[in-house]
Length: 164
Ligand SMILES: CC(C)(COP(=O)(O)OP(=O)(O)OC[C@H]1O[C@@H](n2cnc3c(N)ncnc32)[C@H](O)[C@@H]1OP(=O)(O)O)[C@@H](O)C(=O)NCCC(=O)NCCS
Image (tube, rainbow, N blue to C red; front, side, top):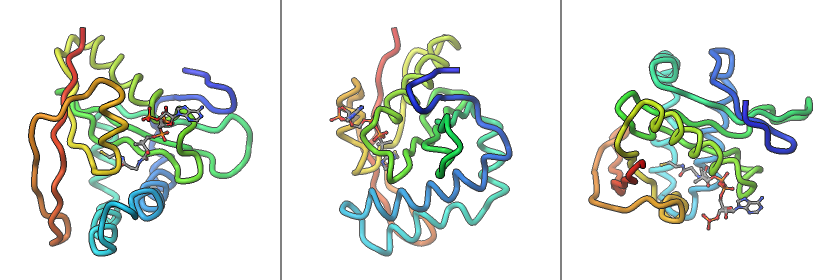
């Protein structure tokens, strides 16, 4: 367990699912609102409609949450998961806990897992909102990806960082 003042990072547990899906929707609508259209925000947040798929992917991947140490609300302040082949699948910090080092420590935790597994690099599809965050942590853009989510078009930046 990584301890950081009033919160710590621990592995994801199935009982975290409801709270992290709510965090995900709220963060998108609050933190990403300046970078996407309302239609895109709704479509992006709607991926939690398939709770079974979310649960399965969080259990198949290596997932962590940032958990508050005291009994206050919210209880979970961020979460992140890494696929077995080294993709950062999700990284989200609670809308009211941005800029306090939670995203950095979650990402460092995923990098430590990937390094320990002998993976050569980290890869991810960055949102517009998160791109500078990743750039400031050594990730470099190498392309773009386009996809439809609930019928709405998204263009993400493909980024990578060597692990050594
Ligand atoms: C991207 C994201 C996960 C970063 O999470 P975060 O918890 O805010 O990240 P951090 O606090 O570690 O770092 C954010 C900034 O705050 C600064 N910061 C770190 N610790 C800090 C502290 N104790 N006090 C004030 N600022 C701090 C960092 O320097 C960083 O700035 P920089 O990127 O210019 O270097 C978060 O903004 C988020 O949830 N974004 C929306 C969802 C999203 O797009 N996710 C990615 C999908 S690909």
